[in-house]
Length: 127
Length: 255
Image (cartoon, rainbow over all chains, first blue to last red; front, side, top):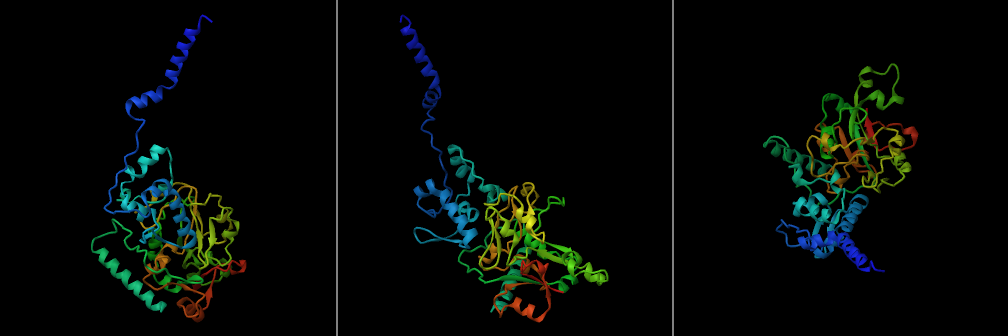
């Protein structure tokens, strides 16, 4: 039992090393990092409230996809009564034309890799 | 009514084409013609009537093919193993081989004949699709949902007309000019003519029928007795491809 202090010190060193990534990021100020999304549109509102869009845009896009492809229903009536074409390229990317600074930034942060743009066209890349 | 609209759309598109040609080529194509407020074209049984006599008069005409392939971002791949086709020309004796015989008029036998998806009433491709990514809509269009296609190619095997193509590789690098109004495809999905479903939804006729300057292609509602297509099949004897199979193809040929 004479080695108690050595064990405690060893454990402390172990804990410091194992939690190093957390310390390191806290010290570097990265722990509070949030992607800074840039809005480049003059439009005042999206097709749905921002909170909903932030958390549920993928569900909305899936709904749009099914309704357009399966039900021939292309017009989206938004929460405030505006009509929109259900189109990723022509409606979403029309306002959020800065895909790299908007979509990609958050997707990279969340480590998700949607394959929408394998087929759906990014207007700025075409031009 | 349908004749008036058809003429109006043709005139409007001709005027638009003339206006654009003043600037040179279609360097930058915006999807500005897409207005969600436009009423969709509705029908009970969409069909196409092709007058191959008019087609034969214009030997090197590929306006319909070019228009379709441009408006749907169909890649131009040379290799026959990997090529993608929505609409193309095939010799008469290949298209109607059961109507062909040894002593057939040589000119007719070799006549280039337009072929594309027949949008069958009883489509075998739909029966075999394991993911329901292809199905028949209530207006008769045999539609595809690329999102669900797993690339099994059962439909390619089932289609008796060879109307379906498989993307063996990423098609995007082989597209000349990308049209913004329609998505491209990715490697591993099947594709085919969709009867311009995206245009019908916006009240515009299919690209091939509108591109034809010689009136060889007529699109319309076969279920409507007053429609132009019904009038054409009433006035002319028409052929359909492999009718004995019972697929009830909805592309009619005036010979």
